[in-house]
Length: 333
Image (cartoon, rainbow, N blue to C red; front, side, top):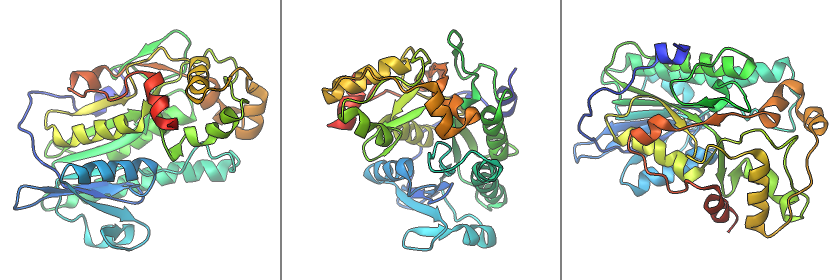
């Protein structure tokens, strides 16, 4: 049994659905509070980022109210300092989306940045988990978004939510610590972890760094191109998060990846080129990736995992973009 299997509760019998009103947070948490009129509120950390913005828009469209947990004060926000001193406002759900961008090409992969990557995830998660534990009326749901780096890269293995991992390199250990920081005692709050793949969407995420070279016909696979490329459209990632918030039977670990699990990096490059009407045959050599990102961090681009969203599908989520071609056409349209 893996650390995650031992740590995170799994779904039992379905319970009745509840409505949510989302509150989004700028750094790492997201919550909701039940309202007398039948709506609920959610608090969201990391809510001003690429994923948080999309999640807030979807939640509001579904009639929820959203409050951000942010470093800066403002309308519809509480600060992290306010969270620490005044505690968590009454809400139905909390979501943590915070964390420094690991693949920021402008940052050297040194000890200082590694500490920032850790602290930006662990400290905010611990703060939210502590606030939930101390709340007089804790939220019904607590959702954390981590990553598929939990699973060891392989050209042959296939991973679902029950697969072992989390103990073989910096990134897998990071996910283990991250998920452990979110764990709550007891079962008064439903706990969900979504391990996300590469998020594809307009205006942000991984695709924003790829579009220019691919539009110029200079794109292609990274390294050998044989490595698996677990991906998900932004609409489906926030859809999974919303489903986990609204459906009371959802609990435990969900893989936030598309069902098209056999996608390789080379296949992704060809599909992106096709969506743009451009050739995509110029490989990016491994040595160049290592020069920019460092050997340890380059593994995230040069190696990959075949990840299956078995529990996500079993939980009843229906994908808007299960296939890569349609997802990329929407992104680049």
